Amino acid sequence: MSKRNLNQMLLVAGLMAGLLSGGVARAQTILPDPVAGVEGKMGTQAGLEAWVEAFRPRALAAGVPAATFDAALRGVEFDPKVVERDRNQNEFSKTIWDYLDTAVSEDRVALGLKAIERNRDLLERIETEFGVEKEVVAAVWGLESAYGTYRGDLSVLGSLATLAYEGRRGAFFEAELIAALRIVEGGHVERFTGSWAGASGHTQFMPSSWEKFAVDFDGDGKKNLWGDDPADALASTANYLRHWGWTKGQPWGVEVKLPERFDYDQTTERVVKQVGEWQAMGVRTVFGEDLADHGPGSILLPGGHRGAAFLIWPNFQVIEKYNTADAYVVAIGSLSDRLRGGPAIQSGWPRELRALTLEERQELQERLTRAGFDAGGVDGRMGPKTVASVKAFQKARGLVPDGYPSLEVLELLR
Ligand code: CA
Image 1: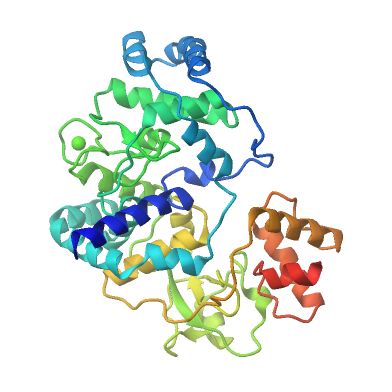
Image 2 (image 1 turned 90 degrees about the horizontal axis):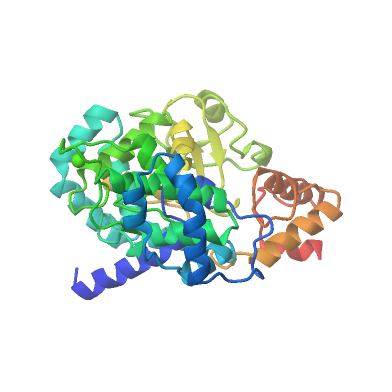
């Protein structure tokens, strides 16, 4: 690959990291506030400095030594860009196919194969110790930082202090900032930079996740997720996945073909059946083969009935602990398949459909609820309740009830 292509890819990886990807505990941080303070007043450097003074006794009470606190937060800079990102993070969303084009691009697969080759011994030791396949660990690494090449260059302390001070989710970021100060106190990090919401290192851990899950895999006494050597970061990622119940040998999912006249009420993570039952209902792999039995699983249609369908197993929910977006989980799963020499996703996607804007998603929820299909609020998040209400509406109108919140559904409600 030429340097130019590589740079382009890294640029894309960086953009992507802000959109969907970006780290452990993002499952919490990515959740938008129902009343995103878009109109709120922007803070200032002086305001941040006053906030740091007020925060100081709380941090000291939490066990941060005064000298560490003062050295770390003296001169910390207010970053308005971080605030803007925080306020607007849920404004735009991508369709799953646009996301996968970037997340599981041929470049990312090729770089991943090389990264595995370079780190084979390390990844195999991690696989043995934590029971998480090297291709899965590598896929998280590939998506979170393009295999360590894009780790973010914003000051973690600056971002967290800005977000803790700015207040929309102040308590959450204050706790993260205290955890970050403990990382500094222990001398675990030399250059403490990351992406905008405080996720950092090779696999974009939040500081609180570092506290719970980081391991010193190379035995140098530091849990260093930020240096050029990825050993600690990759082992910490495997440790994280193991903690949430990763089952070695169980696929995240497999692409399937549904029979004609399939009952689309069955396509939700909440319907769990034995593989034999799915098989009896006519579900086969996308290549027409019998389904392998990896235990009870669910059918997922992340792009509606005209896109790819997957039979997913509990490892899918383990990846969700990194990031709850279906697109993210499918990307990790598909990339890990590719790194193992497995097939790409075979089915096409309804590429002519565009993603709904935040406004449209809220309008959809409002109109569904008004039409008697309770969408569970108007937060713009297409959660299980909204999907169920879309399904109910589609059924009532005689459409394929796949629960996909398309523009077509919105138009029919208008
Ligand atoms: Ca170490």
